[in-house]
Length: 326
Ligand code: 9Z3
Image (tube, rainbow, N blue to C red; front, top):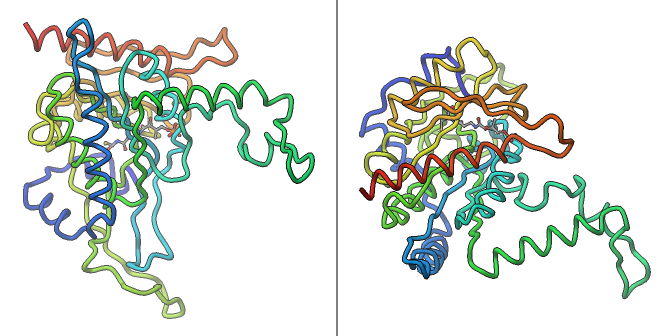
């Protein structure tokens, strides 16, 4: 729901009280103990220095859109556009570059290693022979083998932790948990915040418990602004981590100005600016040193913009690490 009340409205100042009131009003996570255990196990494996004495790099990739429930026993909700393709593709490239990845994703959105499978992989990739035999259909056999073996490989080595969310309440609580646990890695931790995060929400306590009834005329509902957590992430949750956020707009005339604002206001290291229609072709990497346009290699049919984007971000993270350690 970016920019519902004009481009400037969503960037208003967030106070500590707004943040406190958001977390106080959020329904507590049902599986927070399970998430804590998984994070601990993942970090125990991935915070041991490598043989050459280098610390491991870990990135938290957020992916997919958050929902805003309108009823506590939710039948209806407001959604944010994101297929999760950017997050899934980027996760694969970060893993290739030697990072361990926490993939914080919206349930049901695109998954790493599944991009070359058809939309309904289960039904389209497999052929029923008889009760004891199911075969992979020939045109998909290579893609299925690669997806299974690449996924298996990173899971087996403990390099990929997948954590699903649905609502804005779940997303922000989980982001806080991930960020505070990654803070032990200092500058070796990175945040790559591609999830499309709701700008407005209904506080839990003022939300109808049961399904809102129709038949009594127009629905009058007031939404409260979601506090911007980017500044808190930078300042309090993981102050030494390398932080990359995304800025999505549909109006290209305001995109770069908004990206500049996000960079200075939330003290991000990088803001990746993208326009809805061209997001798969081009993004602009905005830093304090200037703006670099990153494009998909159009001479290659299967190329994507995430490949050169992650290469550039990994280089920038290396420079940040050298600067932090010198
Ligand atoms: C993005 O801009 C992502 O690049 C997309 C990726 C959602 C466009 P897809 O998932 O699309 O591949 O279909 N994310 C938006 C991030 C966002 O909501 N940023 C907030 C903001 O703009 C700051 S955290 O206010």
